[in-house]
Image 1 (cartoon, helix red, strand yellow):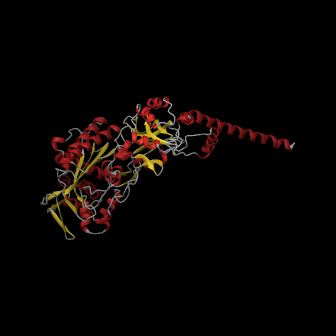
Image 2: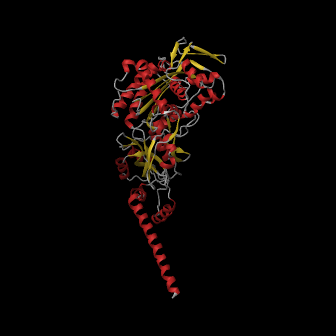
Image 3: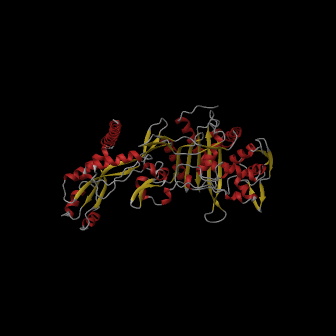
Length: 571
């Protein structure tokens, strides 16, 4: 009786295991036949499968339009390649004549490959369309084969190329190189598989293993970058570079409240579909996150905000401006080098007075100034999801020398990345918060729930009241000085500041006398900022100050953003 009692539960356990196994098997069959049906149909077609190449597949990268619509930034294109077996190719001349009647093939290269009689496989042409592939296949030329292939395609060409990077060979394997393709390699990469002799049942049981330990981090990504905004920024930068023959023109458009990057570009750039044609490999880097610059007077609002936040000054605080100061044996001047008399902090911003920034720094003290600069994020990486981000260089502030702190207060002597500067300046526009900038909005995972990227608040760097006060001062500077009636928007408050900095000599001490970096930032509406724009030019020709080179481009972008996003007036 006891034996019978033990037998029934055992049978039930066996039934449960059989049921679970059957459910897993059915689920895997569905996955293979339906979810991945296209892949297996393609792989089963032995006549159209390359015996030498790994199966290439990769996740998709999409831009995100303002209405949430996805637009392809990087995808996988299907096509065909043509290969020959020199051992079986009886008449190379005749074969070439037939093939060249359909596609363009270099004759010398074809005959050179056809002469390798000991080599059973030579690739002749890639990325053939279906019609051309069918025409050649119907010719039934002995020793000539057509195989399917896939490759990375960037439908928008150069658009956001410095952000996207490209897929290229790393050793003998295709992988993401530079940009987002590199940073999100683990997400975008698909497991390479030989495209021949796929064992269907082995795949089923391999799938059971995957269910136990599947690679969850695999899928597509949607960017925060808005393609229309990106295109407008790039067109603006192209015009700037052409007009002023600058070495480089760059820009960032960021949402201050979240850190979301709406556009990011640097000109010149490259076409990732033909990256091998780039004349300079430095074009593959993204200077917004991978290069540092002495940004000049756009640092002054950060200095004054820090001094006000610490309680050292108010907007009404005055000082006597002699036009110069001597520290550690070095003379520092205002850009015009003349005395301005007694001025307040508003005049410091409106007239961009170096002596005023130094005064504000000295009032709060060197140690407090350094702490605020680090709090703005200049001593660390921003954490943006782009590869090989570099830290800003503020080691001068550890020297203790008065002159280093003085020059840093107006944006010389310390070098920062444009993305770090945009992030720090966003704290003025969002009520005093340092947000982590990011370029990927959502990750659409294949084997796990989708992952929405949420804004990350790193810390509070300023009191809300301080941020509002510096915004009022920047709006007044724009209305009364920088933009004036010619560029001023009557119904929108716009906070702006320009910067003109001498370029540091490469691998030497000191600065070039006639080479400058121009910078310009602004945000609108100033007290509920929907966007912040940062522009910079290196070594522009024929123009001395940033107010002349960048004011109009900035306002053109601002007007575009207001109209495109239908932003309501605030005054």
